[in-house]
Length: 195
Image (cartoon, rainbow, N blue to C red; front, top):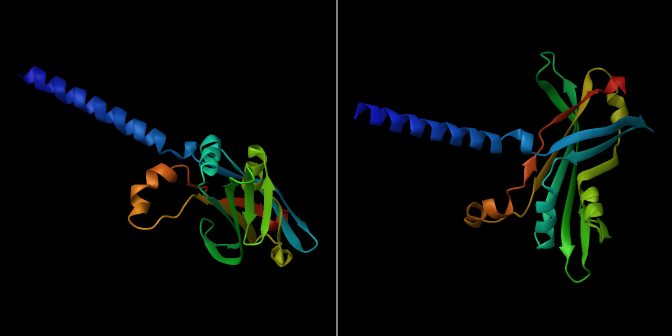
């Protein structure tokens, strides 16, 4: 009887270990999107940044947009003063937020990508729609030249959210419509004095 109980406990422990490893692998940041700094330079008193989001769920996002779900992407750009401690920042001296969204126009059979509330571009190509949504090219940060020193650096973040539902629907449908949502976390540039 004692041998049988030990065998059952060992079997249950192995199953729990496999389940924990599977959950850890699926929740790992290795499967999440990342933000990459393509170019960062000063030009005419402004900081120009080119960024791209990598490793996102391409097919799921295309399918969701084609089915009518609006996809919202928010880029955050900050210029931050370095802390004396090194691992913390002292304060954010400049901040810029860029909002982009993509939706599918069923009548024209095209994708519409909007930046902010005014700029709108249409395309029939899925790849072009994803490029317009997930790539920032030469985004201008006005007045950043005054922070060109070793004390300051830029940091960037991209966050994607699909639809915003209201309670209780936000909890019920969270796993059906928002499982590809992501937050890349902050990506830090070199010191702005080095550019």
